Length: 77
Image (cartoon, rainbow, N blue to C red; front, side):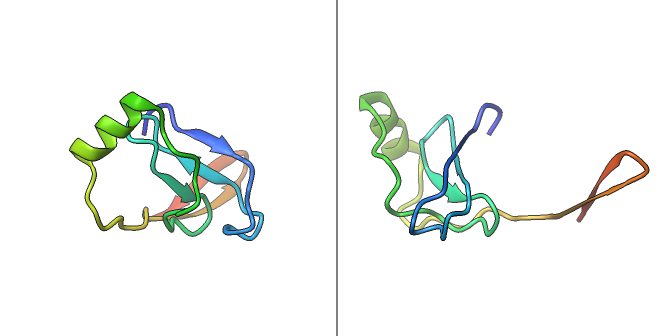
C-alpha cells in the first residue's frame, strides 16, 4: 500500500483510525489490522479491481509495535 489513505475511526473500529488500500479500497483498523466491513464502497474501477484481485475471505494486516529512542523510530518485528 504505497499511497494508503488514513481515515477517521468509526463505531466499528471503536474510534481507532482506518487505513484504506489505494489499489482495492479494502479498509483496515489501523491499530488491530482487522478488516473493516462497513467501509465506504469503492467507485467503479475500485469495484473491478477489488473483484479481480481480492480474496473473498479478507485476512487482517500484520501490525507491529512502534517505539522511539534517541529520536529514532523503532519497529518491533
